Length: 169
Image 1: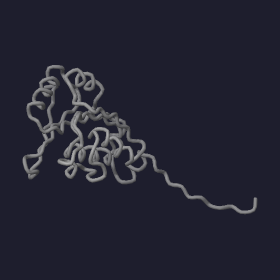
Image 2 (image 1 turned 90 degrees about the vertical axis):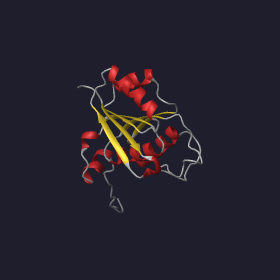
Image 3 (image 1 turned 60 degrees about the vertical axis):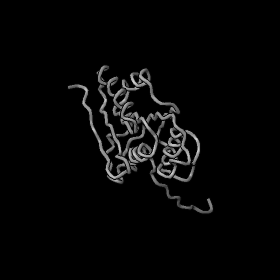
Image 4 (image 1 turned 45 degrees about the vertical axis):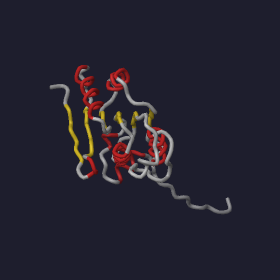
């Protein structure tokens, strides 16, 4: 041996990083079903990843278009493609331990019933109230056990709302 050189390494695993910044590690491994990857859904997904959730399933059949990409969390980097796939790419770039199952389609009744059985949380960030009401009915009729949040912005983005539904009552 001619020389010994000290190498420094850092623990960069997802659990450790969450502990260092003060996040609870209780969310790691919890499955979140996110329905909607548009302007609001993209922000919600990013915050979930920053707060210890590393297992997300995303449904959104819409394209990221010029009309909406400026409101999207990762605006300007991509202005085309499917919202769910683009969000998948950016979340996994945040940290390689974030697992995203992106579906470039709107969720239907059959898929919702399948997904709700394994989800710890279901978060709706879609803007159409008719769809929200239809999916809410499906969850209620099938005794959903997951924690469910409906999140929406009022027109103009002035106010936001979160509604938690408990289907066990």
